[in-house]
Amino acid sequence: MQTASAPALKAEARNFNFFYGDVQALKNINMPIHDKKVTALIGPSGCGKSTYLRSFNRMHDLYPGNRYEGEIRFYPDNTNLLAPGVDPIEVRMRVGMVFQKPNPFPKSVFENVAYGLRVRGEKNRRALDDKVEAALKGAAIWDEVKDRLQDLATNLSGGQQQRLCIARALATDPELLLFDEPTSALDPIATGAIEELVHELKQRVTILIVTHNMQQAARVSDYTAYMYLGEMIEFGKTDDIFIKPQDKRTEDYITGRMG
Amino acid sequence: MSESVHVSRQFDEDLGVLRTHVLEMGGLVEAQVSAAIEAYASGEIITVKDIVEGDHRVNKFEKVIDDETIHVVARRQPTASDLRLVMGVNKIVTDLERIGDEAKKIAKGARRVHEQGMLNVPRATDVRHVAEEAVAMLRQALDSFARLDVALADAVIHADAKVDAEFKAIVRQLITYMMEDPRTISTAIDIVWIGRSIERIGDHAKNIAEHVIYIAEGRDIRHTGKEA
Ligand SMILES: Nc1ncnc2c1ncn2[C@@H]1O[C@H](COP(=O)(O)OP(=O)(O)OP(=O)(O)O)[C@@H](O)[C@H]1O
Ligand SMILES: [Mg+2]
Image 1 (cartoon, rainbow over the protein chains, first blue to last red):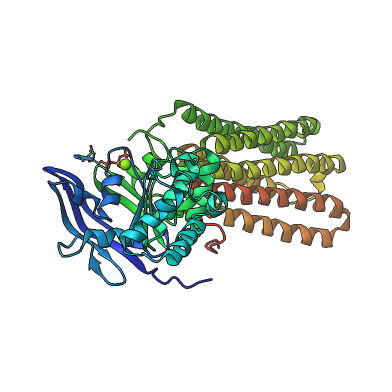
Image 2 (cartoon, rainbow over the protein chains, first blue to last red; image 1 turned 30 degrees about the vertical axis):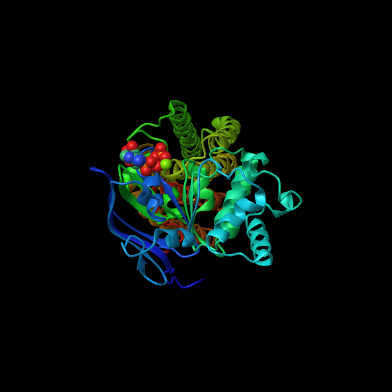
């Protein structure tokens, strides 16, 4: 049997609050994100999952009036992602995001993946080719698109588009990948492919995933956090949460009971 | 277990049916055991045939409940306390079915003993006493399931050591009689087997109590070596 050493942290929310103007959407969140593990965020609609997820790549900065309090520590360098001196563009290179609905740009498959690399200043054609191929392979879609790299990305199937978006996020070699309900628009087979991909990706990248599908959380994650009304109610190993949650609110939610 | 109801009323009904069927099966098994003990104690072995046939009903119950649990798992993907209930029921039903088998063995043993005339074996009535304790354990284990009463389940687990000890004492005594009077051997051996079945019933009742604690609290207390 393995000795239980504390797993390394990739990130950590500390006394984290978030406000949409005057409205506080997240309340004093403290939560570890374990390195190269999958952490699932679950909770009823409107509880703040997306708000929380977006904080990790400073998406909220795009709108005036939004306000962070507290810290999101990022390791191993121990920077506070929210610190004013930290460049959001740099953060988004290290923290990639995949959305609910696949949102490829209306450009070629190749350009969709090359985009982030170009933003980063990569101009060498060979290097671009290599990195795009590596990202498409990483997202388990290379075989399906290698002969149509110049086709419009929007012509791909929904499941393919979602894997293309994952490839786009992977191209800049992020350390943390955020998924916001990545399979809610996909059929069970495409969903299974994404879940399998998540499982493979955690070899090299830490993953935070929002899902409304309890079984999906149970299938793909190592840790699960239950959020309710802007608060982190319970965080634990996924097995513990799904077999013996400590908080009645978690229990009621995952068993489908009315509180 | 959560007091609140599921958003899906159908789910609540499925789990309710499961619980009810376990208790019905438990009641049937308890009646089987009591009837078998009664046949042994009173010599009214005319009931043995009914008991043997009653075991088919126990077996049928097991299949029905197994079907229901697999249905709930397939349709509802239960989690947390619901998951523990379904898994626990699955195990409880196995123990109940085994208790049913032991009841049948006791009934058949009673028939053999009385056909041979058991009265020439002293101490044979001690068996009745330990049997009553085992039946009480079973009844309490089922009650603890009905109410998810952990304290009662704990009491059942502790009672098992006593039943085990009494069974051993009976065996020791019977061995002495067999040595003193070899004519008692055949009957005494049947009585040992009956005692053995009773002891097994106590073990299964204890298992049920352990499953109840798992269902209620998620603690797996099996094989923790806490028994005496
Ligand atoms: N741009 C915004 N301005 C003001 N309030 C917002 C904004 N976006 C979200 N909210 C509010 O913040 C709260 C959290 O919303 P959020 O989108 O994070 O919830 P969620 O858990 O992701 O829900 P869902 O499961 O429906 O996606 C909600 O009350 C929502 O109405
Ligand atoms: Mg959301």
